[in-house]
Image 1 (cartoon, rainbow, N blue to C red):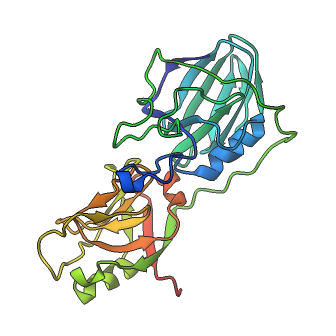
Image 2: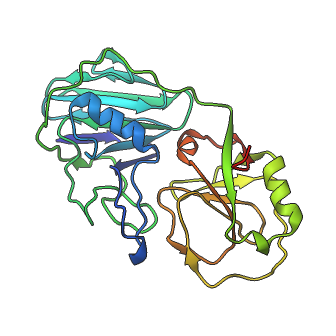
Length: 282
């Protein structure tokens, strides 16, 4: 069992999500950096599909009522096991009753925690992931929560350390135009591909909101609701683009000017981070 002494700004249970239900209005959800959570699980001997914690910016404090192996990946943070310092990117052995203190992120935004046995909350539609938009899965972790752990599946990985990628100051994202590019003036796509944008503080697990040049529309009004995919760049009436992330809605009525090939880098993008776009041919 994990006792949550301090949950931090936003800590959620996440796994690899619940794919295959978009036709029912259920997005995939899951870790914003699936590879980081898979790595943490491998380090502690879990299956890659095991649930862990996604910890946003401010860290958290957890007490383990049983002995466990844990691993942290993602943003670089200070780690302490009781009074002993620990490291990100390697297995850490915790005795029963140990308190794990995870500090604020030095760079980046999110850290993923895996514990031997995985977080064993009740699955919903085959996943234990918290979907912050629909409310499926467990609610965000709160102070005083007790999170069950499953049975350990195997020994921790024989790894001295792993190397986390550096967090870039500017994200350069590949954009595939469409499907509603025709709802915008010819200048709109040029603006999107030549103008830097900044991550807005209003961003969350649903989407990365951008601040920059407004994209002018050629067609007023809204579309009948149509399907949305991960990475869709939707443009609401204010002209400021929004990149949909793991907890995105599955339908929407604002036009989508393009789709980002790979959204994982946005998992570590703090407010103010510069974002630029380029076409798939560049």
